[in-house]
Image (tube, rainbow, N blue to C red; front, side):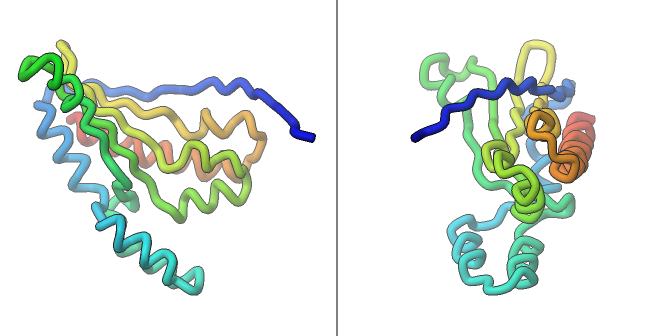
Length: 167
């Protein structure tokens, strides 16, 4: 018999607004995260036979901040299909670190629904908004202090990156 369960999750959104141009904000984030060839990265992960081999693969893929880009979605390109060049720029970056994800998953399996994380960089009339939904807020309802500790450290890292990029 199937068991159905619904859980309410209250998410905290961290946002910082920058007066810098969109391209400058994006470039500041790109400098601090890794940009591996994801097809090659996936093959290397599969080929890693030990935890230390996996750690080496991830270490080679991440940037100075210990994070890497998994993928990006140019949401602004979709807006431009309808609005042309007057459409605002909007970019969703999916980033993280598989080793950090692993640590959260060990203590809270549902962390896999939220990792890697998403950062939204969105150009608006009053500036460029950098937004991030805190991992700790996603994991708090699951009651694992160990997972929450890892999530809070990740939140601190991502939020510091967004503050620096917005400067």
